[in-house]
Structures are given as structure tokens and as C-alpha cells.
Image (cartoon, helix red, strand yellow):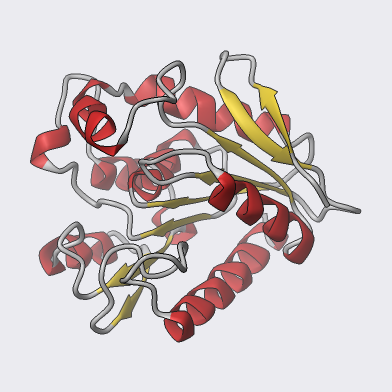
Amino acid sequence: MSGMRITLPTGTRAEYVEADEPRGGLVVIPDIIGLRPLFDEMVARLAREWRRTVCAPDLYPGREDLDLEGRLAAARELVDDEVLADVVAAADACGVEPVAVIGFCMGGMYALKAVATGRFCAHVPFYGMIRVPEAWRGPGQGEPLDAVSAGDPSSVLAIIGTADDYTPPDDVDALAATGAGVVRYEGAAHGFVHDPARPAHRPDDAADAWRRAAEFVEARCAAS
């Protein structure tokens, strides 16, 4: 099952894989580094294993050549309405309903913000920022917690590592207090699931997190 790059109606590029006899759609929001072979492979795998047509939009359209330092510096320039328009356009591009959304790191933050759109049957942020980091705050950025409260918190399952500085315990408790589901992995650091090349990767916890995510999406979206 191979993917292809498409251009969304918003003008943003995305990786797309159509599943065989799909049960629904899935939007994958990449981490801050954006689309690359890691996510191309993930999109293909999820289309095959989860039997969902998958679309993954880039977070920095028109600025794909930015390195990590440049992306971190430009984070305060991101505008929620524009990013979420791409996320919703990716959902529409799946061409099948219902559609869930997952995201990683900054993409996880936007998976939380997507709750307020009401577009998705399930939201699974993997170590997504629950409050916007100080260095990323700009006029176009709203708070993820506000977005969750504005929608259906029960549609959220947050995958969290307890040793992740981007998701401090007070923020995680505040997210759980909205009614969102939270799974805490003791001692896990940022990025412990999606990239086996990272020192933080924990294979057993990653496998468990993927299993929980798949089961949550299946249950929530089957009921929608």
C-alpha cells in the first residue's frame, strides 16, 4: 500500500493513502519537523493496519525547507485558523466518514485544538502540548485546553509521558479535569512512541500506546 503527495484545497501539501475497504478516515498531524519518510511510512502502515484512509498535512506549508531551529522560531507565527483549516481539509480529502485525528508533539497540540471544530469522531494527541509553550505564543495561537472544553472532551485520549517537560503534571491534571481520557506512561520522555530512532523511544510503551490509540479510535468512531 503506497502513498502519494496531494495538494489540499487550502494549498497545503499532504501525504495520502487510500485504504482497502476503509472503515473511515484518519488525519495524522506530524511533529514539528513535518512530513518526511518516517510519516510516509506511518501513514501507509496505519492505512493498512487500522483500515482507514489516511491523510497527513504539513504544518509549515510553503516553508517545508525550514530546519528544526527555524521551525521552533517560527512557531509563534502559526495561526490556528489556518492550521485547523488544513486539518479539516485533510479530513475531507479522506473521502470517507467518520474521520479521527491523531498528532505528535506540536501535531498533538493541534489534535487537541481540533476538538473545537467538531469535525472528528476521536482525537488522540501523543504528547501534545496542553498549554501553548511560552516561546510559541503569538497572536494566532489559542490554548488547547480552551479548545477541548469548547468541544467534546470525552472524544480525547491523550498519550502522556510523566518525564516530558512539554506536558507538566499540572497541565495533564487540567486536561483530565475536562473529562478527557489520559494515559500516563511512568518515566517516559517526550517523543517516546512515534520515532524508533529517538533516544527517548520505549518499544514496549510505544506498542501499548498504539494499541490503546487504535482501540479508542475504533470504539469512538463506530459509535458516531
